[in-house]
Length: 183
Image (cartoon, rainbow, N blue to C red; front, side, top):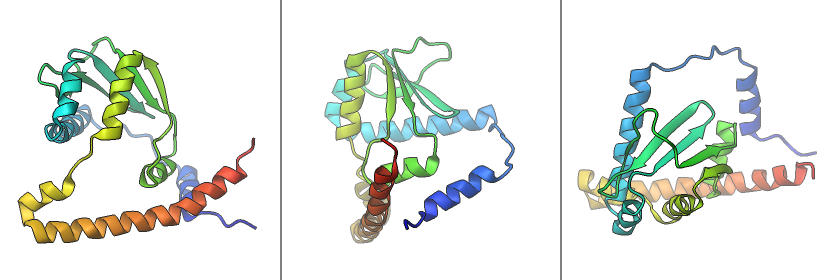
């Protein structure tokens, strides 16, 4: 008899809760999106090749959506990103198809890419895929600027060990779910 994952139990519990569907205020969504764009640009500034690839796509708009959350990003003439003005024509639509936040987190923690429905320009989709595959945030380097090299390395090492432990914990559950899935 297969045991049920604590993630599955927690998700089933959450789905049964009669939570009201509350939308965050527009100003909060806008602020979170602007912070996300700032973070993405900070990461892109560390990768000249990524900036060069985005520069070739200047003015192109990518719309990313997961459930009710959505953001439209435009490539700037500087090879960075900005929020696309409302009503701008989308060149590429990316929709994350996994509805469960817990399953999505499991996929990301295990190093898998989530399933995405792609609609629009294939060449732009290839560039976005390259960015997803090759651009990484050097968090330890940024942390070292704030707290010093040794504490940053110690924190990063602890985070890597935690990530490895989570991957090892989630891997057997993901493979058992794959075997249980109907064919």
